[in-house]
Image (cartoon, rainbow, N blue to C red; front, side, top):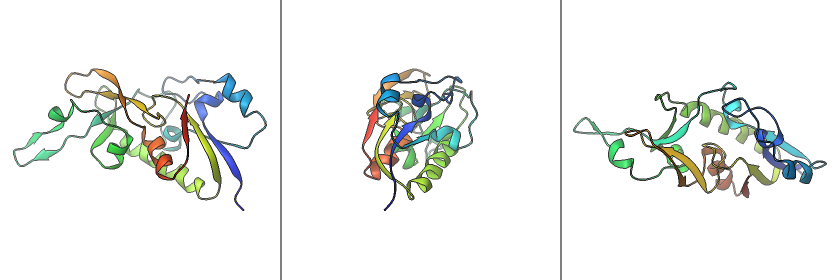
Length: 170
């Protein structure tokens, strides 16, 4: 029988793994799981990103149709999320346009390999994160640069939900 763990975002466990080099220690979560088996992960760091790193939001992927024009501008009115990223309809980019999608997906896939060896009871992830957000994530309009909170899941939260793992945001 595979061991049963609770999966927790590294930043919520007090590890300085956030984009700005800080943590988001959640003391109530820490107390709740003090003596429980935990799998502590950060998809961004697992994907090879440094701490600190540029802040990243989910943006629409530019798609070119016969005219040579990008359809990203018309799609900016719609929100996008982790599912859109996995479907190659959205990207994870910085405000300066640097694309981090590959690193985010690489981190998710590396953690997915670990998940094959353990049983996860539930996942407790950082709210609104482009990786871990569950229910809401930040989107950036590539035309105006405006950042807004939109309905949807981050790329890692989406992957966990597809695996039928219960995800809770903190």
